[in-house]
Length: 430
Image 1: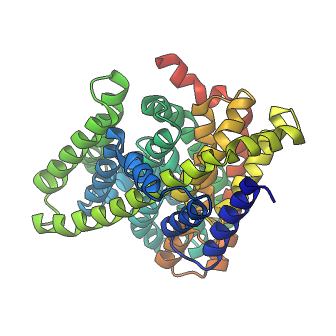
Image 2: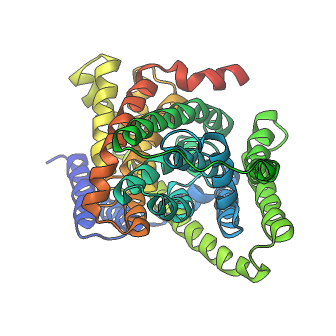
């Protein structure tokens, strides 16, 4: 049997085998790479070189700063101020708390860039509030976890930074701009579904806000959103790189949370830093392992083989992108978001570019698919978080999430087959 075929089989079988045994994904990537390199008689020093090279990027420093900013904002009590601001905007519509939930998730996701942080921070405020006001617990959970996915699309999503690096240094500015319009489309789609369901279930309007409280809510709401302005404004204007914007946002968030509001003591920064370091270490080890895995994929010409396979099925971009979306949605269940980005980008990006898809456009498609995977078992991190906060079973949370999930599939098809939705802003600012 051909040595390359044996090596490809060995790589795939060890990867699937370790995944079935529920090893951590970073170790799965490392073990499958090592076993294949030993068979191919490639010095393991090459793996070390590729791992170091994989994390030797200045742009990667943006990820810790974005994560730290989200952690500080969550600890500093800014989530509640965003909820109040969102309530001021849409709370008086029928089912207003549901719409407030979606808007608040959009606001917080615009700062944290993380769906899990979004679900835990906004969910801990909104789900108990909705239950207290007579909303069904499963409805509150399904809406919250679906709305939290906005955090992976809208800037400053660190997942977009991750894709940029894995894809070979695609402009982070372009990726951030590309996520804005799909993010708003997703927001209005989820709000529409939430409103329709609220009318069917007979949920009432929110309580009116006293006029004397409106100026304070406006002030604190806009102030809470200002770190996002620092990040986006700095990058779009060209004043800062993504890393520099992240550093400025982290510093500004620290001053805002611990200097201006002072709801949390300064000692609360210690657990914030611990959580940030833990997340960053996991992400960096995963990136390093995926760099070595990506190298062995390229060495075995697997991306070329996958491209040839898709082109042999059809030469229609419509059909190929449909197959890619189906594949990514299926992988989203057993695979977490970061591993999917790191593993599937080097495999599927050549397929997309071969049929004329812009890498920035493909990046949003991949990120959107991976975000939807956070809602589906058996991994479904956001699903687990939401169900734990709302006190509902996984089956109840999954069932309640499905109407919103179907709507998200519609948004996915829109951004897949109408590239102007994604590419309009990047083209304008290019």
